[in-house]
Length: 136
Image (cartoon, rainbow, N blue to C red; front, side, top):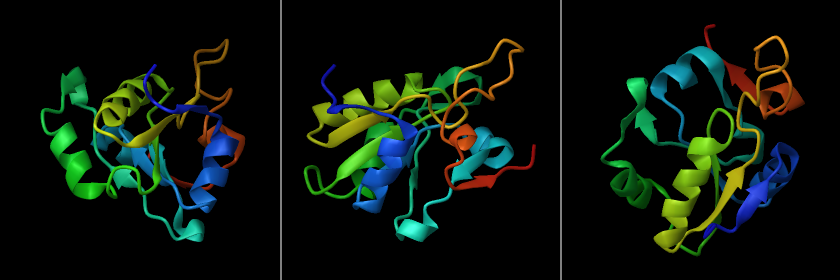
């Protein structure tokens, strides 16, 4: 792992309060229908850059979009978020290779599936962190 490490949702929230920037790498459909982290109380807008598009098609412009939208490498921590922590780990590794101080948010926005298959066990949303819910 070349990124700076993994953070729990609570640790990520504290880092956001301290000035880190959240990078949500989920798809536009996930943002619209499932929701997004609400970071307005820390006066720190997240970046929305999909790692893949619907259907799992890689975003060929991910690196360019990250370099255009993110603060200069090394100026602040970036925390990468996806649904469960897998895509965000890959994105954090790529960002670290570009010189960013990048972290992966464990559990992601929705967390892992419970015994019933629903994502209600953990993750940003299920741990009660600020959320703007989508139109499920």
